[in-house]
Length: 78
Image (cartoon, rainbow, N blue to C red; front, side, top):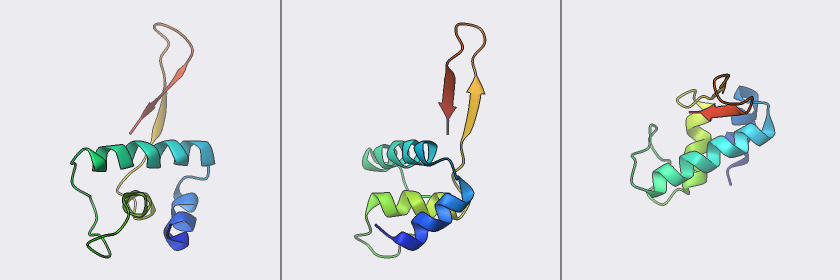
């Protein structure tokens, strides 16, 4: 894991559990074939580092939306 990307991503999203969910979801998307929104540093860069770099550079953000129609559980939207 690239610590620099992690620290930069934590500055963009200080809520650590939310940051973990963002990275996890983005890694699944990358593993399923979606293209990265940033240029990888190397051809074999880990998907987790690519996701952290996307967050750190501001290409990936998250917002919590309250679903008041059915229940009071917040929904995560990337």
